[in-house]
Image: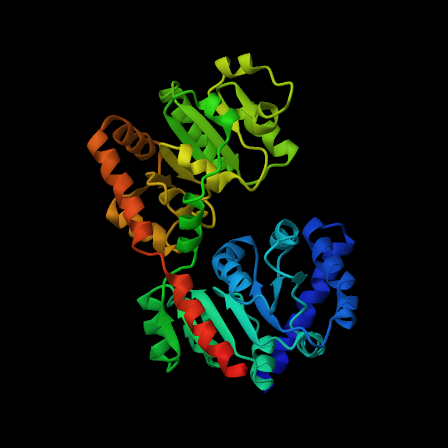
Amino acid sequence: MLIRFFYTIGIYIYGFIINVVAIFGHKKAKLWTKGRKVQKDIYAKLSPSDRWIWIHVSSLGEFEQARPVIDQLHIKYSNHKILLTFFSPSGYEIRKDYPNVDMVLYLPLDVPKNIKRFISAFLPELAIFVKYDFWFNYLYYLKKNHIPTILISANFRPNQYFFKWYGMYMRRYLKYFDHIFVQNNISKFLLEKYLILNVTVCGDTRFDRVYEIANNPVCFPQIENFINNRFVYIAGSSWEEDEKYITQALKKFPDWCYIIAPHEVHIERINNLKKNLPSNAITYSELTAPNFDISKTLNSNVLIIDTIGILSNLYRYADIVHIGNGFGKGIHNILEAAVYGKPIIFGPNYKKFQEAIDLVNLHGAFSFNNINQYLDILSNLYNDKSFYNTASEVCKNYIKSNVGATNIILKYIDDKLKETW
């Protein structure tokens, strides 16, 4: 088809640009290109007797949505092998050693020669794509090879290109999925409007993941000592714009304990953050060092988390959670905080996230546009116990009412894989 031809040309151009950028030293581009080159020899080492289930995610956020499904597949299908692919280096580098899968790879570029090698090497019995990172040539060849393919935790909006006049050719590829599991009724309505009927509303698998985390708490003794019974404000995945607000909170509420987990944790970013704060700050690395002088905590009310991978477990210590990037492209994961019944605040750019919209409408989360709104929200949550408790219960109940997507998806997978036996 002509449109797929031009799409493929576009993918070749995209790959060429990434390679050029990598030559000039762009870190992520270098990882992207090198990772795909070194894995080309893996195909020849695969055993033809292996039975593969393939899960593809874009990056770390989509991995967290797939993770509950992956973990259950690992338990239930021990006779199968699980292949996990990433598009982005930021996801691959962090999860390349994930223990509940048998192989982690970069997704080969979405062009026919790559796909034919990939599919013939693994011959997956099932392919699972997550949210909205799907590639049209892959979908075409999966369909052509009669490989069952599903999309999970999908979220469609009217302003996406699929539903524009110029998206009609791409929209047809959504019909190549054997089934689409969407997060909400709006997504289902949009798809059914265009006669894409193999759709089930089951919610977001991230609810299952955060519920699991909350029910398996991890303790941080040094952080507990640092908190020392103070009121705790945690900023998760903060950006510079968020931190301008946090400095004002530090001035108005100097007796609180502040835990800041910046979006980036390289040394320059951490040093700049420490320099810009009006209070003495220590880092998590310092706090957990064997020779740390505990007396330093007496003069500090700010702890900077300069490592990754622990934030979701830290939220249980919070009294108020500030989710970052609400003044950027969009907020980070709020469910990790909501599961503990923590009132949540963030900037104005949250409309792409249904859970944020829901919790704002239910008064479990609060958005602010300026410093006066910000400080008013903090004051109300701190001084009005009834207001605080209501917000807390809203968040906790919201999570409980939305768990269960993983079981719905697994039931479908069970039935689908039985058809291939």
